[in-house]
Picture 1 (cartoon, helix red, strand yellow):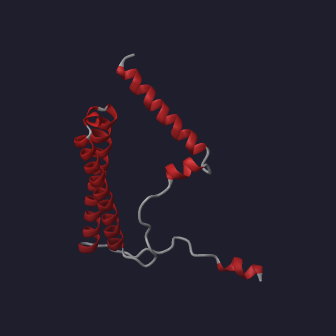
Picture 2: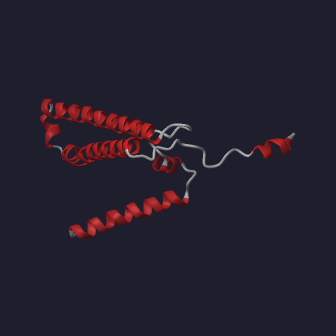
Picture 3: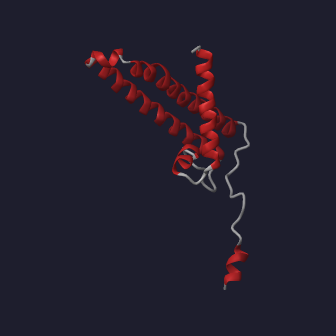
Length: 141
């Protein structure tokens, strides 16, 4: 089977999986796949401070991925069969590289946005988009 057909089948399976997860938003897998990971803004927090927290979050992932890479290369050094395994090569050359790149790029972009907000503005504080409706509480009394 040609590689183009294999790639097309793979992306068709990915697309079908995402559509299936979207149709069942209350399932455990959907919640796991579509949940937000990272810091949430705090009411009253400046935008620049929020992005500094995002920089720390991304750099934390970077450090974690470096430790995983070091552990995998230590395993490859100690056990020659691991070094020859195809899954090891795919994990080290593809998945970890993408993860490290995304974490560094995310930290860099968040640092740029934070510096821009702090130096050139605007640097607004986060507020709730919708205030809690107090009339509902009054109706219950």
